[in-house]
Amino acid sequence: MPSTQKIQFGFGSLRNTPHVAEDARELEELGFDIMGMPEHLMSGNPPNSTCLSIPVLAVAAGATQRIRLLSTVVLLPIYQPVTLAKMVADLDIASNGRYIFGVGIGGEFKDEFRAAGIPVNQRGRRGDEILTIVRQLWTEKNVTFKGKYYEVDDVTLNPPPLSKPHPALWVGGRRDAAMRRAARFGTGWLPYLYSVERYKDSVTKIKQYAAEEGRDLTDFEWAHHQQIFLADSTEEGYQKAVASFSYSTSRPVDELIKSYYLYGTPKDIIKGLERMVDAGARLINLLTGFSDKDNPLNQARILAKEVLPHFKG
Image 1 (tube, rainbow, N blue to C red):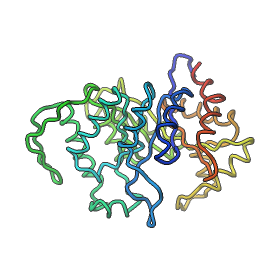
Image 2: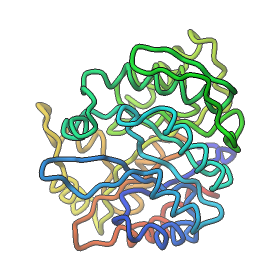
Image 3: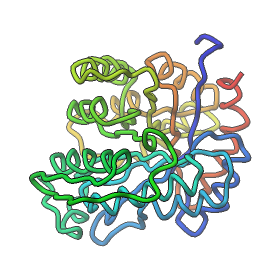
Image 4: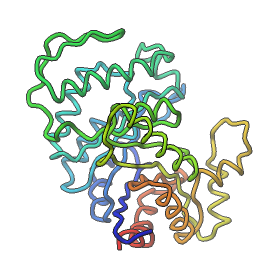
């Protein structure tokens, strides 16, 4: 890895909402570049504890000065587009341009679409319309739009976003449709559960799709969610990963864990991260596997001391 490359790190899987201000301050002090905040309206039934990322990150913005604030990810289809555009613009201003509007279309939890009154099979088309509208609202006045799902009639946001031409917009997902969305609308790419090979392939595809759209990706940000399991040994880390695996799949769990997760000692984590950097990732949001008794910030402290310095010079 050439020494001239600037690699940045975020930290996600934080504790619940009441701790957001103190966690944000500590992550900033530890030297993390990004604080990631997941989002769900309702995951499971009975539901797990969840939050909407924009209001929670607004609290983090007021508690910090430097760290960037990333939604991982805003579920586009559950929002009304003008309201969403206004919320993002306001947080962009309040955070002095530090907010990263990470977006996705969801679908893994059907209950949250039922709760929002949105058919889950419309989520991709609705998401694309919403992105079309919010980008116009951030950059134009007197916006009028008529689509299949949404209509906007002579709307102007005042004040407009601080960031120009608009707030950072990272598209999350796993499939080709998400890659096309990133190439068309995004300023960054944020996949999850990706092997090194699949990440490298996604970089190639997005560049191809962007060329078809006539887009210049010079300032495009190549990010990645990376699940890690810190432990005192490689085997202990592997066992933690196995214990946490909860996805329904026809593929062998062992194969998926070795493809998607990093586990073991800090040295093991460094080796795995180097491979992802070589595949093209430049901003890596670390997601820690932990039990209910663990404080994930303990892992952030270890990472800040033993992993981040390796990449920061």
